[in-house]
Image (cartoon, rainbow, N blue to C red; front, side):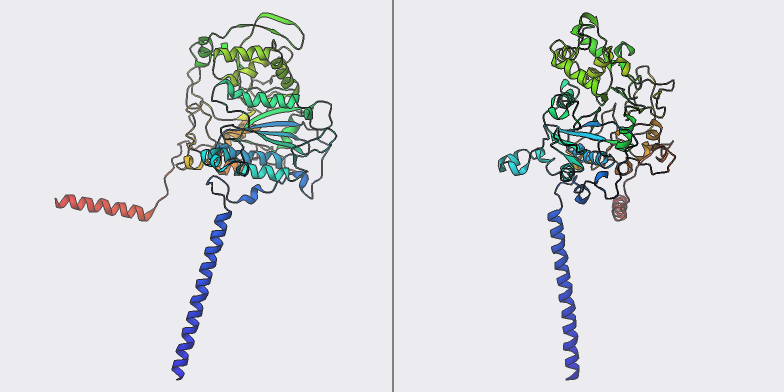
Length: 515
């Protein structure tokens, strides 16, 4: 009977072990199911949402000590979001601005989401609406919304309702969705003009208030990142900084570098010049000069090309708004002319043309040195670095660069909303191989940067300089450039599939030999 008891004891121990293993497996399935329930269902959405549920602005840190010794400008940012990808990329941009900005530096962040995407809430829509257009809920489930909510939940970081008697230096952070710009058409200007009107006319931004005011307006695409911290950008634009009282309506991706380009600077056959003259844009305008009060009749107004993305003084923004409010102001007359003639690329010409044809502000354009860099800050050759037209000849038939460029990865369309590759003339996506060029540019911002193309660059920017560091932020960037012989990416090796394919080829060869 002793041997029977030993067998029963062994069976019991094995059954106990098996039962424990079964419980562990079931528990793991339960934990996995719970995890999947909490994970956002959108593939592009960051599954690790903890990085977006905490707003770590400097003022909220226990060890933060405010440094009042360095002067800084109050900057109002407009961030334009137009699709699924830039919603996700925009989260990194807002986070970079909020978490590298000292109190008062980033006075305002206005986020404008394209109306075709929208900022609808599933909680306020009917079931039929939810099924009809799922795209309009992209923002509602995005890391950008989670991060904005986290910042607004921390009153020292951000607020959506500044009062005139409030001395709070928190960033005024708001999300809007009013327009659906169409590429290359006048509507591309709509979000920028709306933001300018809002910043000038709304009572919370009136000059003379101790809070809610701003000094510099900077508009950015959602797929932009700052190269240096937001507080350093504010210092450069301060009244004593090298960028003070300067209106940047272009960057060095333009033919004339940091300066706007006259339409007559292009050869007659070149598309930008030919297009405007084919549409019979008048060369002479009649308008009211709102600075001098003089009614200018039949005076020459030259069209200038610049950029959609700008950095402008408060004074010039106010002048643009006033000149558009008045029916005879240069802004309104120019807008009506551009709309009536249906010319394209007005987002590149409207603001640059007003600036260059306004005597009171024409002197505020950047002053470059012989090398094309800013005279007062020679390390700055670009306000914003981006790659444009680099594999196409310029108007004089010369190639800008022979460097390769980042193409979209195979799963790019799945991670976005079916977005395709960049247009042949750019702007092209940037990655770590562009770091050397970014370093050389001295740019404050870079575009196009996307985690769906090269998340390594997203992790590296902005560059923060530690106390005692003698190098500039740009010098701290690694000098990584495109290899001279180019780069070719190979798909990962899958040995089993390769062996199977080899076997199939051999079997086919043997069958053909037998025949």
